[in-house]
Length: 304
Figure 1: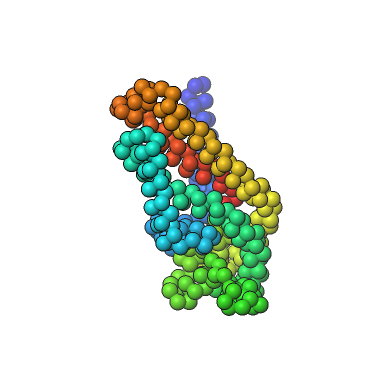
Figure 2: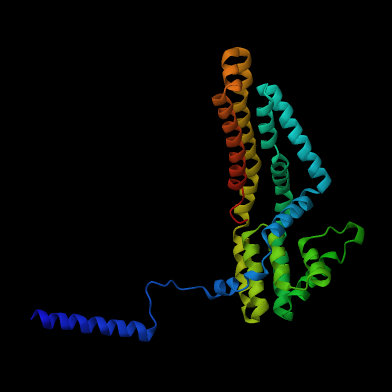
């Protein structure tokens, strides 16, 4: 009886296995998105890390109308100010040098907060831009001509000396005069505009460059971007408030040290002269720097 039962189980198992093989069913493999798979085949056109960093700073300078020279001067001023403040605060050269090093990325934080207004203005008109380019591309099946149509329409009634270059103007110029690789140009375009929906739209454009039948997948992305616009405005309005609260908290944290200097000189000496005290101060400075990066990441809108 047991042998017959085992035979039935074995036959049932073999039949199930045969059905899985014939129908090509595999419960351990997740279904792959064909669009995502196509994107993975195009990763060779992505910009390198150094190029993405360069694009990030170019975008930041464009949005804040800052130049490289001004940025370098801001870094020197922040480092010098950090060293002077550290000398006055800790009365120790080594701790002042650490504080100067921690103040090195301060201009980047400042420009990031300052660029939020310009970035919001760019993104507010981004939906209309994407819609114009998508409609033009649906009609002519040419990405470059579609972007050129938008650029010409945008600059038609604006005098040449008043025109402000946008990432789309730069895209056309790069394709025409620098690098004719459309995929690479689109990746650079996506890196210049920090928006999740725009990034998805550009990736779909890259797929359309290889298969024009996918061009109708561009319209749902624009609709989804319109639905998320109100959330984006609320997130941007909270950014300055969060930074203000963070700076107030950091200021209160470091204000304890000069108060200790005048209220209890012995404790201040232990804090700034001993190895353990210096370690605690360095830990405070590094914590303040790390939390600044965290605040910058946390205040980034969810659709960017």
